Image (tube, rainbow, N blue to C red; front, side):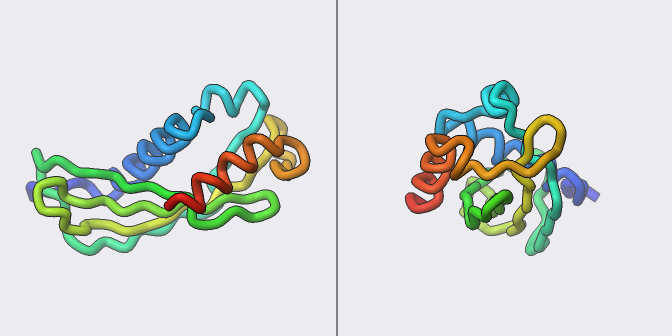
Length: 123
């Protein structure tokens, strides 16, 4: 078919999420040391146009919502050459410890919470 497999977009969402966390100074490896986990609760994709083989894509990721014990990240996947939006979507994650018990970042890890809130407001 010459187009990207639909499930790859979810992998690209994860890549965008990992890159954003790295950029704000809290890569997954550091979060897991705390321990903070971000288990996936929901994923949504709106497929606009297909990505074709060998196209260079850009994943634009931002924090769109911070709940008490959850976070929502939004993604746009665009073709780099012309900026055409191919997919828009989001993932909702719980914020838990390594036992999957919900954690309030605002109370337990205020520095991390503030960093995420700052990143969200800069978008």
